[in-house]
Amino acid sequence: MCTKSLSRSHLIASTCLALAAIVLLSVPAALGREPDLKAEFLALCDANCKIVEKQSQTNKTIREARRGFCWDSYVVRALCVAYDMTGKQEYLDVCKLWSDRMIEYQDKMIPEGIYYMQYGRKPGEGKGDWYVGDCTSIALAVLATAIRCEDSAEKARYLSSVKSYAKLVIDRFVRSSGGVTDGQWPKSDKEWWCSTGVFGSLAFHLYKETGDESYLKIGRGTIDWLNRQDLLTVAVLYPPEQKENIKPTVFMYCLEAYSTGLAHLEPGSPRHKAAMAQLAKAHKWMLTNWGGKAGIDYITQWGGKFGGLPFHVYVYAEHVRQSEHLIAAADDELRYISEQLQRTPPPNQRLDQHSQLAGFAMMSYAEKLSPGSMYRTSKE
Image (cartoon, rainbow, N blue to C red; front, side):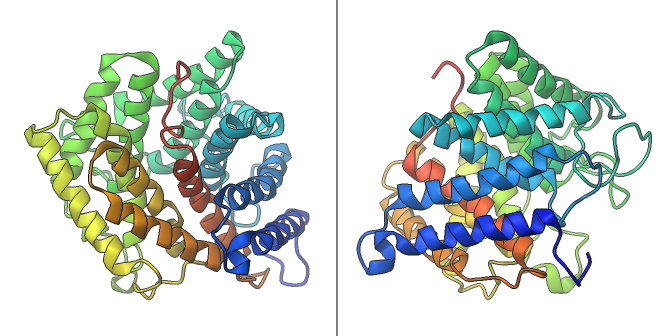
């Protein structure tokens, strides 16, 4: 990246984030009163909506400002919930614009079905890296867009895109163990925690939307694989100095499968019991390390995933009684995240990580304000 001047996309993103910070500082929480979570959420939506719109309009197949489409995907999913809450057409229009661009690239990708990540393998190329974890994040956002479409043809187009991608992964990258490999990744062709967790979420979500039992089977298989892992140590292939910092990322992505799948696990079954044990370990880690206690900067690649962890706790609490202490802790963490977002990052070095934290935090705000909307179907 040029150190002499910011790119146009950087300037736009910087301005949007600055405006968001001003709005966040103007809400009651800044004055010592109860926070206005809806105002904070919609301020983030308005700011990030402009960033995603800019991402959707670029014709370049190069990664701009170190921001990949998988980061946008979490903003898009939150914007879909914001649309549910407010009926603001701009939110849905931007989600459609972004999803249209994802499909435009997808139509030119090899093999058929995968998404362009804005890095790695480009449209038309027959070789190069592409990752199930990152592509699935994109698929989840396209699916969230499809669910909000009232026009049947428009909805069918988005849904067909997601199903095409899912078929490729199921046919080629889901293993008999239930785990999912991470596409064309030279470091490993074995089952991977990130791809398994995120694709498990997509499989459960597709089952809920379509009723196709084959997706349910895949989703439950991912839970079985994840249940056999130690999520505190599963992130192999990283340097020793990163092993601690990557834990928020492991929980953010792996718990996607649990959050979507809890409703589809028979209570009291061995699978359900093992899942609840895994979630208990995850919650223990969160309660111990939230609020900056882990010593991990939230405005970093790995620390940014802290933004999405309250989201998983809020989803869990919808399924499990007597979760008040977890909800209270998640609320406190969301306040801490808001404080981190109010920090002004040096624009050349940390803007992208600031916006990553914001994108994941939007998921947490969305679930707090509109429980169940993130994983709803078009029938709800």
